[in-house]
Length: 257
Image 1: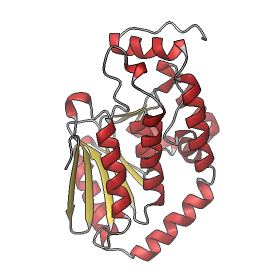
Image 2: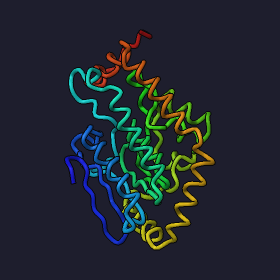
Image 3: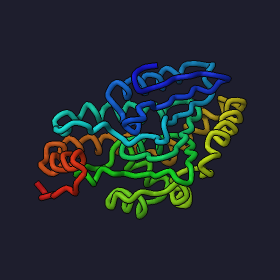
């Protein structure tokens, strides 16, 4: 366990819990590094048959930690590299990974959930690519994973208008694999993980590799395009204004500069 990430292993299930509930599990640098490293280690552990990724305190993750008066001065390309490391680790992991989502999954928190193999969402969950609200573009591979899941038109709507999708709407759009009542999340995830933990690991690994190759063949290019685009955007006045407005809880005034 590190600050912000709880790790448990039981009966073949590696459970990773984002645990900064006061910050809606916003992803800190330490938390991102430990999450990526844990996923990378899990790839080589025979005792891990399935991974569950979830959040504590009623939220999955509000995304990158943008706290502080001058957050734009501390949010740089290293944050993108940390996010990309997590996404690469999730997609390359030769074991099924299940995201258990209640509450908000926003920004890179949404991107991380979408990189998992199965996403079990509560009816009241909210999936949000909120990047445009602060003058940024989606990252964490979301330009590839969202479009692969629900098509170009709906991915564009989600990214450009930054409209949240409820768990039910996300399921209807094909963004998530399961939607359940709010009080049924733990029971449903437990049933799924028991089945996966007792299933054929070699077949699961081969299936995951094949499906990802067929549907996410552009993921690596997307990660690089997102990194390049965000690097440019992070130098703009619009992003500085967007992050200040976020911290001050007001509507940003973008000028295109």
